[in-house]
Length: 399
Image (cartoon, rainbow, N blue to C red; front, side, top):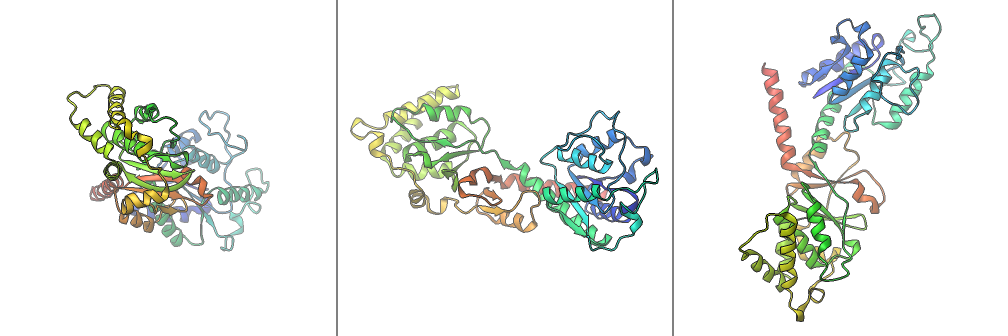
């Protein structure tokens, strides 16, 4: 990964060196002021561009707020919630890093109990005009970081090197997981008022696009036959491979479309009739929506007038799903505190999880809000990405 290391300069020189050394030993591409030519005059505009190009941002903060530049000619300043005036270069770098919500921000703060030379503390040191620099700015900055991020505390440079190595490794794993999350659309509602109305499912299939997971909310009344039809259309006409099931926002489970088709068709004879009729068709419509309409027409006609769909269907409930699918229903998601710093232990749990698609719920909250905190990770894609990164690192070490 490309990692930007940010801090004030003279007071943290040995700590910066320890962090940079640790990162380069791990094969990361480090961006640091030590490598800038004419560092003292390096323009803020260029520094902000470098921050924005980084995959991760490491920030070291002790007891100096840092140099406040003249920003009147800088055209690429990031926006901030507390105005544009009087920020140090270090804080401007921080705000630039925050622009990308997917970029890991890894702050490391000097322990308040760590011994520190008074001349390296704002309030004791003096600015160019021999006026004391208030310590409140750096205190406010530290408080913001502790409020908005998971921070680590250091006392010595060797300790910092180890902390930075662990945090960036965790961030790299987290980035891999985030990049391989599958998109979750808004839940498809049930509540079918009329057995002949299949238009809602046709519209769902038409609009799925490249999604690989479709979500349904069984709290809105789903029938077994309509769950089957959604799975069948998805398998035939889209790239969807899993159905995420929630009940009024609460996570219920994850099912493969194949298991839905297999298990529910075994419950209802008309569905088996439909499958035979669909397999015997001689013409397949070239247009997705017209093909969906044709399949839905076959589906409706597979129910004889003496055995219409409402007389065959069974309501989809958590109890019925457990009964129909047993172990095929993935009902125990991995729960993590945050995707910002995923530990190797979480990664091992993810790789040990049965199946290629892993449900993950992030953070704590009301059960009814679980859908908003739910993710599905494509495990094979994550494995491939991590393997490529490992081989790339090896090649870079050999060159």
